[in-house]
Length: 196
Ligand SMILES: [Cu+2]
Image (tube, rainbow, N blue to C red; front, top):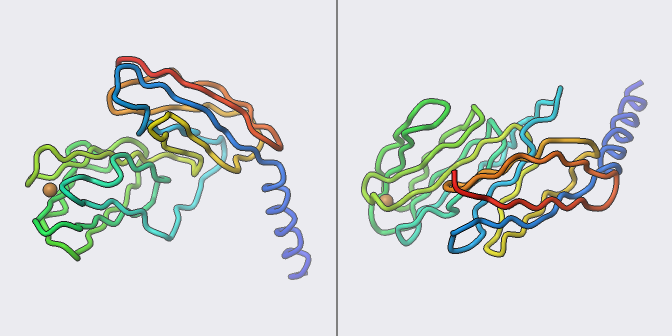
């Protein structure tokens, strides 16, 4: 019996990866210096809840900049906040969907963590350096990507099916698009983001 269960699980995992495609595309951000930092993601898949990864995501603070500038995570993911500078940094969020928080102010080498449990965007700020800003975008599926400076993005191994593909950018927006992911190969979806 155990063996049968094991085999069916393996088969299930196998068919799941067998019928999966990639979503690729290019985003164009109007009146921006480049096309980076757009999050493209599948908002939700009906009837599916995804276990957050045990591995923590990382937000660093280096040379007085948050790295990365935009960090998409699956809902429930814990983010480790580092300080790689010789000066003190702080992290607080005035608009986190889980409730605003302030992790305090700390020196190099210390790590503070926060778990993002609700979907949505959290602005991250540092009260030592007002010009520092970053965003954590918590989404309900693991199917997300961030665009590079050319605007390219790739979401790999998405189970075949029809979904709503959303985009998020700190200053621009675009309407969601319906995407039909093939059982094999890629589907291309491009976005043009305009003023909010
Ligand atoms: Cu700082």
